Every structure is written in structure tokens, then in C-alpha cells.
Image (cartoon, rainbow over the protein chains, first blue to last red):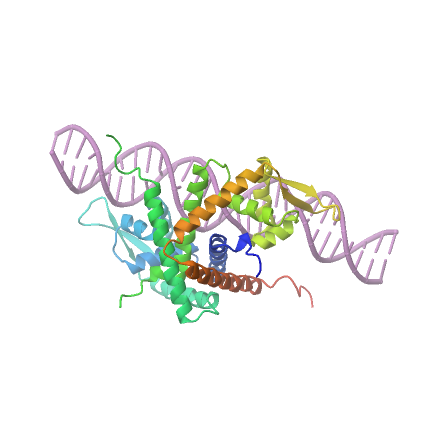
Length: 159
Length: 159
DNA sequence: TGGCTTGGTAAGTAAAGCTTACGATCCTCG
DNA sequence: CGAGGATCGTAAGCTTTACTTACCAAGCCA
């Protein structure tokens, strides 16, 4: 039995895979000349998936800080791919929608992503992929719990 | 059957999990006051796992550019955790070793990592973890292949 | 109506990478 | 043996992705 290298732990593997994936995605969309970064693409997909939702909720869904999202949206809006429309019910909030201009880009990105992931998961059958998806979902949930419990500075400021 | 959200694809999940994991790791080692970043810790572990190896080889093993590694090693060396000893067989190369000072830190980091990963993989039994590990290894291999084939500028410069 | 909370953002910072360029050394082949 | 190319490490500078802190404006509530 071969020694289990410390560099093949789940943690290391996750780090490696995600770095490589980002690189691959980066190359594959910049090769397509789409003019968006992976992060922006991610935000765009999220916005398209939940149209008209306000920024704070998008940020929660993406698991990032509102400010981080705001920066992405700035770029996407600058490219004319999304628009911020003021929420009629809440003067502070802005609802985000994708523009028509984004449609072909979205189609394109979705295809690129699908192709890339097909290549990346080559060697896994449908069952294996589903199992992987489920495992990852479990990890994500655990991590999100850790996150919340790790920073309990929301309530109980004073006694 | 629920609609498969686009935000629950393997790609998105990997991105989420790795971001969250980095955050969790970050918090957990800065809480321990160890004074190294996750990337540096990763480099340190790799160095310890293959002592006396030269930088170029470490970089390959980590799947990063030599320059990126060099930066990490600068920091680690600044902290007195590693040393660069000139390779007696090759005047250009430097072999990297961990110092005695790094020993307790390494023990600590390993423990932190183990604890964290136990929490993160809660809900998976030993089999599930092994399956996950194997799947991820497959993905990493695929990605590394993609990488090489994606930039075939090494050979055949001239005809 | 006055005070907390919430939504968005300006500003600044940090980590983790990359590319490009370069000096120094090594290797190889004529 | 000597010159040209390959390889090793690294200085310099950039990008992406994310965070924190601080703030204003608008809503909510007592």
C-alpha cells in the first residue's frame, strides 16, 4: 500500500482542483473573447438564475460580501450586461436584471462551462458525478455552518 | 424532482467550497497566532514532505509557477522556518529544508488541518471520504492534462 | 420624531497567483 | 574548448478575488 502523501489530502486536493479549474475557466473564456472574468461570469449566472432579486440577497446566495458583489456588478453594468433597477418597495434596494445584450453571452458561457466540466469530470460516470456533487454540497453546508458559528458577533453586543 | 439550480453544479460547488475552506483555514490558523497564510502553510507542508528538494521541483509538485513559490519561501525564510541551501551538484539550484524552529509549527498546522477537515467532512463516512478523494484526484489529473495541452508552446518552436 | 437597522458603496488592503525580464549557471555540440 | 541554448531562481509589476472599515440614505419602530 503506497504511503498516503500529505499532498493528497482532501483539503490539498480541493485547493489544487479549484486553482486549476479557475485557470482553465479563465483560459477558456478569455479564448472566447467574452471579456469577463470568472468571478464576473459567476455573478452573471447567479443574477440570471434569480432575476430581479436585490443585491443583498444575491450576495447571500453567492456566499460573498455585498461589497464584493457590488464590484462585480459595476463591471458587468459597465459592459452593459446587467442593470440595477430601484426596488419600488424599498428606496434603498436595487434589483438586478440581465439585459438582452447578455443573452448570447450567457448562452455561450453556459456552453463553455458545460464543455469544460465534461472534460474535467471525464472518467466519472453519471453516478460518480452525482455522488461528487452530493459530497461537495455536504462540505459546503458544513463550511457555511462553521462560518456562522465562527463569527457570532451579530447578536449580544451588550448585556 | 427539484430543479437542479445552476448554482449547484460541480463547478460552482468547487468554487464555493474552496473559497469557504480557505476562509475557514485562514481563520483557524490566524486564531492560533501562527503568523503564516494558508498558501505559506501549504508550501511549508510541501517542503517538509520532500525535504532537500530544489525549488523548481517543489513548484511542479505544487502545480504553481516557480515565482509564486519563491515569494512564499521568502516569507517562510523571513520567519526562520525554512532555509535555502545551495545544491552542491548544481550551482544554480537551491535545496529547501525546514528548520528545527518549524517543527512545532508543523505539528500544530497538521493538527489544525486535520481537525478542520474532520469538521468539514462531517457526515461522510470513511468510504465516502475515500470516494471523494479519488474523484478529486481524477479531476486534478484531468485538469493538469488540460493545462499542458492548452499551452503547447514548449516544443516545436521551429520546424 | 429620534434612533437603530438595513442596503449599497467608496476606499483601502491582502492573498494568491500570473507574466515578463534577467543574471547566473549548466550542458551540449561543433 | 568555447559558444548557444536551456534551466534555476528571482526582481518587478499586474490581476483577480475577496475582505474590512466607514459612510450615507432610506426604512422601521417605539
